[in-house]
Image 1 (tube, rainbow, N blue to C red):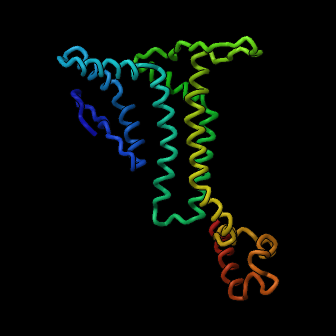
Image 2 (image 1 turned 90 degrees about the vertical axis):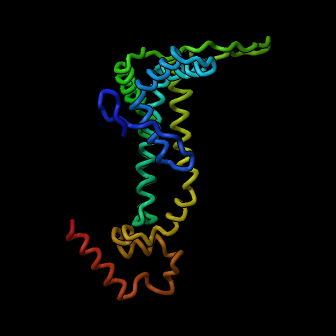
Image 3 (image 1 turned 60 degrees about the vertical axis):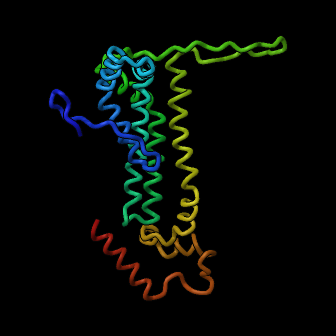
Length: 248
C-alpha cells in the first residue's frame, strides 16, 4: 500500500515476476487500482518532459491504455487470474492431498467455464469502470485489411464487422479458452493417477459399500483370491462411516 497526495491508501504498482503466479494477479490489481494515476503521470510526462523519446513512449502508452478495449482486458485478466490464484494457494498447502487437488482443479475448471458464458457480466463491469474513469464505452473499430479475391472463388471473405462481437470472439473467447485448455493439459497426468487410485481415497471408501467397491475394482485388487477387507479392515471402515454419520 502507498499513500497518495490526498492521503488515500492505494496499491503500489507491482513488477511482474514470470516465475511467481501470485505476482500476476498483484500486478493486474495494482494496475486497476492505480489506473487514473497512471494516466495522470503519462500526461505529465507528455507535457513536461524534454526527452523526445520519452514523450513518444508516453504518448503511445497512453493511447493504448486510454481505451475501452484495455478496460475490458483488465476485467477479463483479473477474473481469470483470481480463479487460478485462489486454487494455486490451496494446492501449495501442506495438508492438500491428491483427492483434494483434483477437486480444486475441477472447481477452477468450472469457474473458467462459467466465465466463458459470462460476457454480459464482464461487459457490465467494464462499463461501470469506464464510466468512473470517464472513458468512452466503445470498442475500437479497426480498419479491415482487404484480401485479394480470385476469379474462381465461390465464397466471399466473411468477417466480423461489429467491433464488440469481434473483440468477444478474437480476444475474450481466445483468452478463456487458452486458460481452460492449459488447465486441462498441464494436469492431465495428475487426473489419470487420481482416477487410477480413486478407490484409496477416504471419500470413496466411506461413500461406497463393500459390494460396490468389489464390483468396481475387482480386477485391479484380485478379489478372487481374498476378500476386499479383512475383519480388522471392516471394523475400521465401519467405525469411520458411523463417525461420519454422527458428525452430519
